[in-house]
Length: 270
Length: 294
Image 1 (cartoon, each protein chain N blue to C red):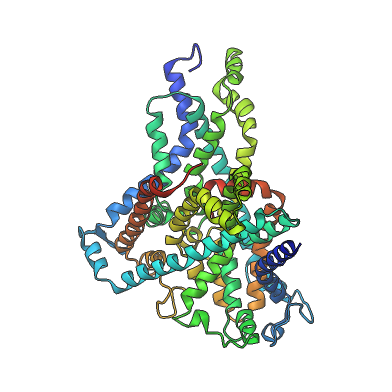
Image 2 (tube, rainbow over the protein chains, first blue to last red; image 1 turned 180 degrees about the horizontal axis):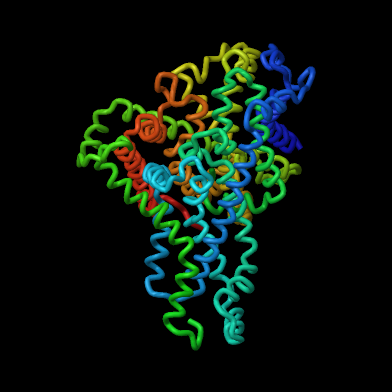
């Protein structure tokens, strides 16, 4: 009994250390300019107001940045799933010369940190005229070696009898891929979906490099600019934080299983 | 190959499925990696014609105080962050592994920071660490401690960055440990307790050794991730105050996109690559030596 109670106390304390900072973020965002600096600080604002949210959308291109983030994340996630699923089909269900060697190249690139590629990638985007543009934000990221690896594993477990009879009936590879194989990989695709979405929603370094003007920035880059521009307006900065967290937390709450599975499997985070 | 399908047709199908991912990989990953090596041998300010300088960039690196400092700071981040996050991750995983109610909510609480962007987390903690109005120094003052200026104090800035990082990643490490803990056969722990082993003894003699493959995996992943530390540093301190939190990736970024030293920045990025390569190679060597498998 004593042991159980102390376990509960420990658990509550640990959970509070996670929750209090997040609540503090929400609380600050609901305070006016004076109450933000009130001492002693109050967790529940005296006079809660959505003022800083209004200001954020009026004085700062928050809506545009939110839309940019949504658009960029959806394009990258969709692209990564499509390209990975197709490549995984070739690697898992087709035979061809040099298959192992090509797959090894995919695997090898996973060991190279992204930061090694950013300078030449920036130069390439510049020569394409893609700096500060949607293609620049998305096109270099439409493929993922990890996704190919993950989906190849899933595709290899599907028994061959399934497609053999379809081929007998005269189906071609695209029909087998889109009607038989792809629908059987829903669980793994869902894992890749949440991982890709989370990574692109939260990604910072590449959008920071490739965007210049406010109207092309994604939320994380926008938030870092916001902080520079409204240095002492902590209520506005925290409101921006809350807005950037809500979509990803909602996605997380509805697909916890896939998140946790995906993250534990990949060792990949932001 | 499908029966009756011609060789050419089969090759075309292979190409069709492979091309989208491969084209992206070649153009936007492989080519840039190769270019990084080439670029590191040039001096280039983005405007003029790149000038071939052979190993001049690396020579310059060896004498660059800023580079060495950033390497030392990266190491101090790694050295502070890794042990701390392994301990908090393991402790919370052990809590989660005990059979008590409310574990779902607990897990969610720890996982929200994991799915949140680094930028939101870094901004939140910059505010929490505010010397005058921040929650942390307020709480410290309640127990009679005069808190430091944190991000404004060269002595404390890196500690603040480490605390923030541990807070964000604990849930992640917890989930990895939890998966490992759940793989430990309950029968082994029962056998140990029948033999009269105490809770602590069971933990050190059964749980920890059997957890070593998981621990090792987490260690390697965290090492690789933490050498690439950037987002939180960039938002919280920008590398300051007076360079106290300057790290490798921050040096790459500044040299490339602030000072337009593309070749020199590429050379630094190759050092990062080398470090991660060494970790990867050591991993496969060390794994054989001390990891216990069931």
